[in-house]
Amino acid sequence: MESQSFARQLLQILAEDWKLIVILTTIFAFYFYYTSTFDFFKKKGIPFMKPVILLGNLGPRVRATKSFHDYQLEIYNRFKGSRFGGETFTNRLLFELKGGEWKGVRSTMTPVFSSARLKNMLPLLELCSNQMVTYFGQYGKFVSAEAKLLVTSHSFNVICFLLQFENLCFTLSETLRMYPPVSRVDRVVTKPYTLPETNIQLNIGDIVAIPIYGVHMDPEYYPEPQEFRPERFIGEDKKDRPSHLFLAFGAGPRNCIGLRFAMISAKIAMVCLMQNFKYTTCDKTQDPVTFDKRALLLKTSTGLWVRIDKL
Image (cartoon, rainbow, N blue to C red; front, side, top):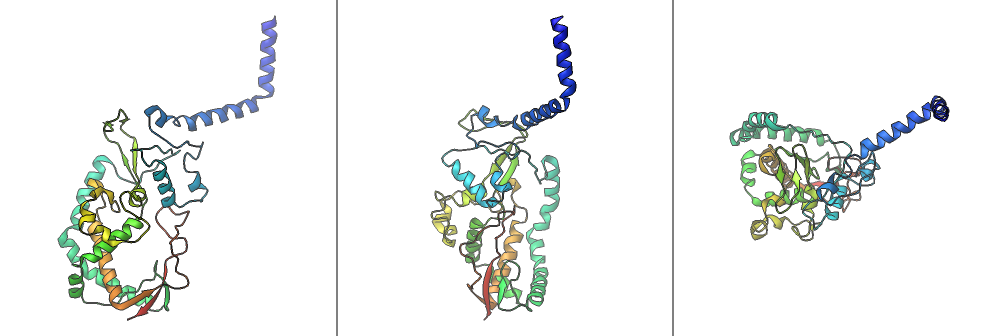
């Protein structure tokens, strides 16, 4: 009788409070679902940042208190001294092709950036330069270097000659070291791999993040990294530094396919601008530059402002 009475009371409670029970059950299920991977790095013996439900380790980014570059640099410095570290996301979207699909597209696109094709692109770059002159010629002395750089017509015989100067490469490389467009790149593990000198196993589908901005701003590799020093990429300084410590275009078989095109385009723009204009700071010039806290790719918070005077 007592058992029957207890059962009736329990059914009565369930009937009266079923909404509360459903809500609590949903909350617990939600919690366990989103925290089920929070011990992923602990199980593997990898140092990691303690995650927060829903946000993982992305709290500063969601609240827009840090730029993506500054946030990645903070994470890099947190794990400084360790060969690896763990960062938790509640969701990851990879805007990259994978496996055979990537290989097919890569092999199709590679000929587009051959030396012969790049040479044939020079007239198009000259046309674009002339269009920039027409468009930007209507602006005054104070312009945003972010979107209003001026160029004028030029002889591509002179351009091709000036492109041989290695100083352009050094300057560009140092600029890209300090201001890489992306602060990190992700790679997906395609076959089981054990990290050397450890028992840590990477499984198929795991994501490995390479901290580009952290490496570029590491004083161990680039002394006084906040200083602009193109000579870092000259002679012994460059020779003594492993090539994979400069990652503006990535590294390995999946590096940027348009690397040479980007460098040639930038060199042509630099030569043209230096031939025709003098650049000085103005009241709007920001030094040091601060990054936009909401942007994913590199973007300044106020634009890049300089004074441009015709030579």
